Length: 115
Image (cartoon, rainbow, N blue to C red):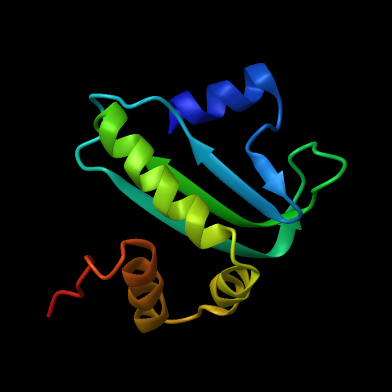
């Protein structure tokens, strides 16, 4: 996480990739235990300093253990985010079940909820 924050401080709000949407990721790191992603929504948007796409109400963070895993998961996430219906789904998610369905869709059905 610190690597991502430092990158934004150094390079600016490059992670804000569309109106209201930020996609944060950094190079694979030994600090990452398992390739994964996190998604959060904000009721009140956050200003990252991107005049065209602020405020951001949807943040997706990607952490990975290797270059191969990073590129694979990044491709899945970008494919998911390219569908505006999926952005609406993310913004409307409120339950654990919603989160599981979203993870399943991003992972192509490979993510299962544990009992």
